[in-house]
Length: 307
Image 1: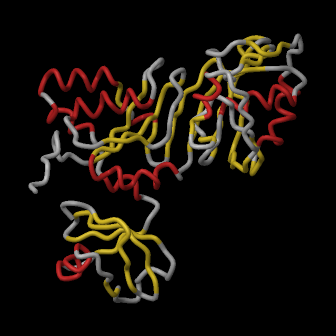
Image 2: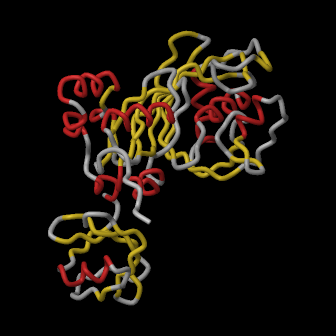
């Protein structure tokens, strides 16, 4: 039987999208995929509809590198409104608790160390975490009581940036994978003897993707209108952008042929990576594979088309 032809262009790379307010991450991926005419697309970390900012979108072969971006650091700017906790821990949800307490700058700064380092965090009920095979937010929307377990997360830095008025405070956070900023706001408010929820959230950094290099969706649409899908390619970063934290090993064409057949190859020379290390291999400057080094051999785990 003949293999069915994939729809779209075999384009591969990363798009550092500035996700607009009110759009889900899935919707943003669908629009970018259509603008580039890509065969395949995915994203590296969900952003809530009420959040804006860095949504790295992988096209084609870049989807194989998504985990390496999701494991990277994330930086957020967010605004908390004191006095009211909501079902969703953001401005979209109904109020569930209120307080007349308004924390001072000194009080806020005093609790920040409690939310820095490795801490235990209970994710919001309205989150993408799966419970018995279903998303927690789907269960919560259906009126079910969602009780998620606390899990360890890493918050590298949490700073109070501004206090526009007694009801609101602006923060900056650098954190690791799996952190929910809405939960930071909820728990910080409780620790301060009040209640609170997020009213503004912007992601500034995800792994190697930063705010300065983001592109707005309307800018991509304008490029598409001027020159079609190919015109959008100028705003696409290489697949290797996601692999900056890994060591590169350069292979000969002979070794590359073995890799394409799923075989391992011996790495020669004093600079060969240590056993147990994850690396990526290139041939003639083109990405070939990602894999692990064991006893001086490179074992491919993901091989890239065109490599």
